[in-house]
Image (cartoon, rainbow, N blue to C red):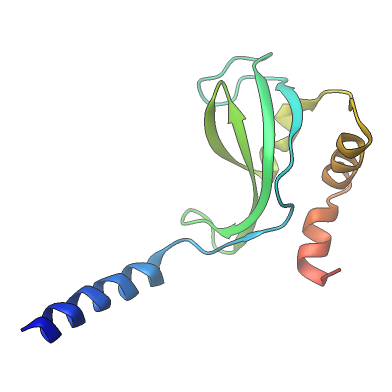
Length: 118
């Protein structure tokens, strides 16, 4: 009986892991500050935004894998698709690290290195 219960639990865990969204972290932890230029979902223009991570994951709504930005808006985390990045106006960098993170983001280097390697 213990073997059967253990087998069922392992089967359920493995099957749910197979359906989980696969994501690849392209940037590591970053903190790029900005604000919304126009309304995005329920958030008005001018709302502060922090981009925390760039990830590549397969969306259920889209056919192929896509790039998403893990953002924090008013303390709530959102995954914003790369096509919606134009709604965010980046703040001027305060440190060298922020400068290079913004440069990587603006030039799409996270995606480039994610596809081709370092």
